[in-house]
Length: 380
Image (cartoon, rainbow, N blue to C red; front, side, top):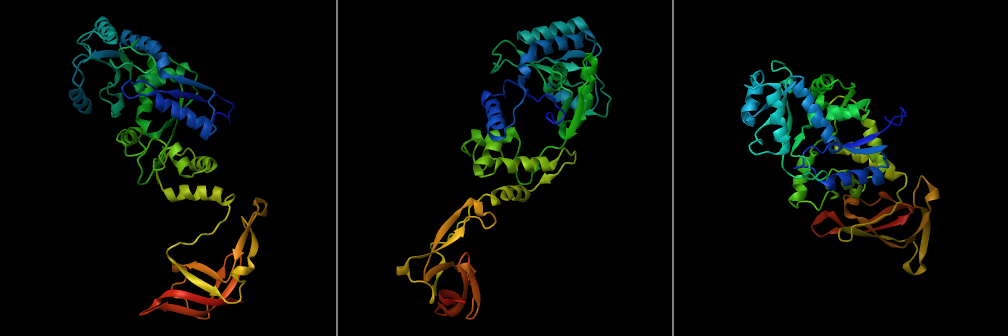
């Protein structure tokens, strides 16, 4: 999208929660984009670079009467929002009181961990995200980039519209799961007098019988149930590439989904089929037979073992430029058991890259006419 319209691609990590964010996640994403997908953003930024700016924006919301401090317990707040009941502080708290409480919370002072900053939007709205959402909370966990400089952090809902506008984002690509939050996003930009950003929604990729949530996949890694994020069973870029998916096939499949808003659960078969198209054009052809489950075939008019006869065949029947290989031929060959079940005298079979053999004799197991033990035939 950015390349098509000669714009800039910004890769930003919304590292607003020091408890959950880890440097290894961010580094692995950058490595995958650069080395596996050949995607090179024009700039890499972090929401944590703007914590100071966001804090000042929060103070502006308080000063303008668009935010207040609240110490309502989390479960009670959830119930009140569902019932559209306003907080007791919403219309009774002065701007000065709210400002001081906010600054104390940001400094990590005692007894301030129960307070949070809430937006004052519309508690009667049918859109639940507009019912005075939480914008700031205290968290004393050291941040992996800013250390202990900050003691309180903005929520994604507050940080995203601010940083998008500041960084010059013209089009914010958001999955449809954030659709209800679009109105909240626009309210924050309007309340702060920020440049408006156009939101473009698209459905996120979901696969049947697969877990794609980072939180849930992290559990598998931390529990040691997989070897890591590059485990071939993991639905990650590294995982599917390690399993054999070609990067061009991965890109083609994602492009084919488009930017539709329609939420669908994709099937893995179509994903692997796209990969097969890429592999099919370059993969060399070899043949193998089960070493323990096969049936010998004697071709009476074929070359003997002593003659050391060979035939030459292409590695790829549709692309001779890939090269050729030699295949040794002789009277005794082996066939997959499943391929000769029910075979009868007089039938013809095709030996790939060699020729057609007419069956002249079928030997079966004693008492079991369907179990073939040995075949004889001749080239026709």
